[in-house]
Length: 154
Ligand SMILES: [Zn+2]
Image (tube, rainbow, N blue to C red; front, side, top):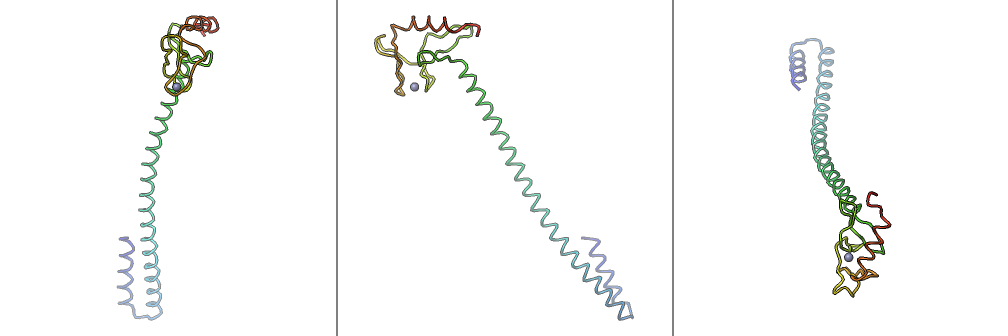
């Protein structure tokens, strides 16, 4: 803005000192053009401030989204790892042990939580309502079938 103000002051000084009317009119035309440039300059300045504000806001939103994506990816890979621990057999889930065998528990295929077979006679069932088609007395045989169909190294 400094250079434009200096130009306005200089042309004002020239208009005051010049005798030629035509030349003075030309100078006033230059002064009018400078004023128009000043106004354009001010509007560019305002746009720039608005863009800088918008840019800062977008950067903030992007950083927040990047955090959410990283978090979701972490959770998805954790869920995938959890699911890979389970093997489905007879409609129920069985959880792998690091040695390749299975935990001595029956898991609900919906909730992935362990279920129970009260007194061994009732079918394994979950609080969500899911019921297995076998009970605690059949567990040993079912686990043996499961081990024979699933290579411990697989
Ligand atoms: Zn359940």
